[in-house]
Amino acid sequence: MPQSISYVPLHIVFSTRNRESFINDEVAPNLHTYMAGIFKECGSPALTIGGTDDHIHALALLSRTISIADLIKEVKTGTSAWMKTQGRMFRNFHWQKGYGAFGVSESRVGVVETYIAKQKDHHKRSSFQDEFRRLLKKHNLPLDEEHLWD
Image (cartoon, rainbow, N blue to C red; front, top):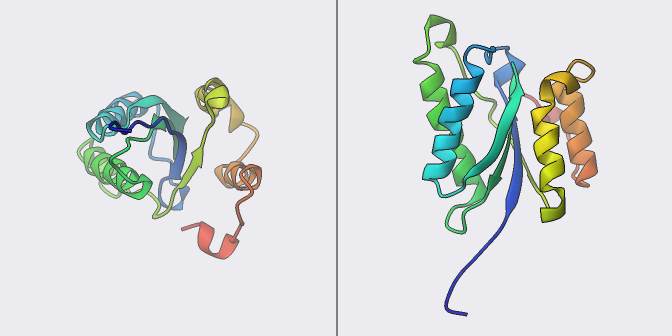
């Protein structure tokens, strides 16, 4: 085949360091827009971005020319620098070191988009840590509490 094509939707999740509540209602829309721009620059357009005051969920199409690790590094590095320009209260902003990236089948893309859109309601009943544990279990991934949180 002379052409390389791919369609790899990814559900990406990461939090602020120590789950600090930096992402308030005022900064969140601009952060999500800025983040979407980085995804696009990396050839991996975001289908949706959302989250709460301490973490982000993004559904993006992974480019065939970038690794998951490199994509997330670009997004986290760029948005961390941007957040620090948003005022004194953000000067100590950092993302956690790790992340979760979960493949999504085409038939589930809409379900994940809805899930991301309802994050604020979801987290009235569940912590980020409990949510992440459920995601790991759903994807049959091991849970190592000692190395999971920073």
